[in-house]
Image (cartoon, rainbow, N blue to C red; front, top):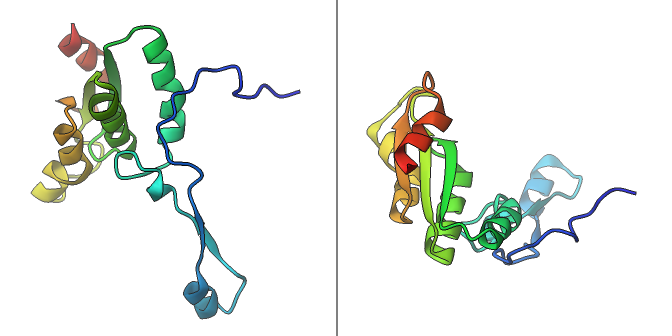
Length: 146
């Protein structure tokens, strides 16, 4: 029998279940079948996304262990990092330090490199350390936290 999640601590952060919505215009345009979309953008944490489901378990464990700081590694426009920053900094009062790889994709504009999720993550209180894909992100993050 597969192991379920019942045995793990969970910190309720998401507004669940998220709705499933019909897409009648797209269904009509394609001539069927009936299409639906699951609206995980409506989870209610950090502008939405499905990463909050994992965070409910990770952050419950962090709280159980008495953590006051989370450490993460992400790419420049990470949705997961944005949600972690909201869950940790804004909702739970934890500090967040993260190594952010800035050169995994080509920098196309200043808006890309300083706006979007990168800007929001900083606004939510995360301490971001920019790093290159050539660097060891774990070492970069560790050196800034200690």
